[in-house]
Length: 188
Image (cartoon, rainbow, N blue to C red; front, top):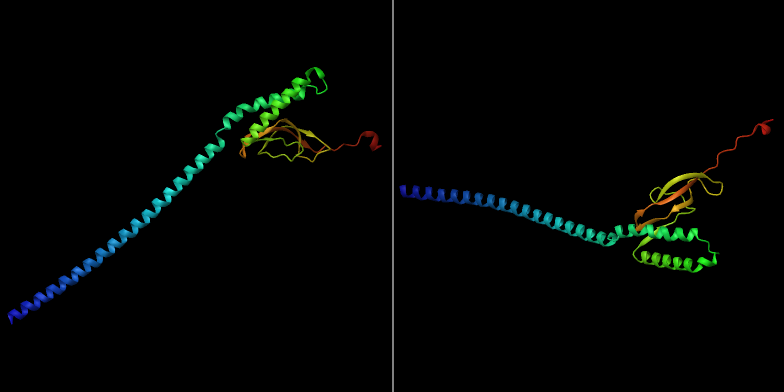
């Protein structure tokens, strides 16, 4: 009987050990599953971060290509202004300077065509509504011909490079004429 008790105790111990080992195994499996889920989540986050970095790098390269000429184009604008001013100040009727005027006109046209190929566009807003983003108001002047807050005169053209403002247009903005007060003769 002692042997039977020993066998029963051993079976009990084996069952308990087996159950304890099963519980231990289940706990370890759960821990491993949690670690796996955390690792998968981390892998997804790393992949998303990598994709964001790649996209930002592509955008930076695209902007660098688009706006690489920004400083160079800014340095060329005074030359265009001078050519345009030279044409404005010279008389098209003066025969003695006609060949020089034609040369300036051709040079200016070639210059403008070249800049247009590189997406540098002039902003010449004469008669358009004033836009504080694209225009810089230098003065206001009364005008009966134009709506108030319209561009009356352009002192200097503005320019955009690939849609980005390079230089605002310097303009005179119209305002409504002041109401005329009745004179003393009209009151009587």
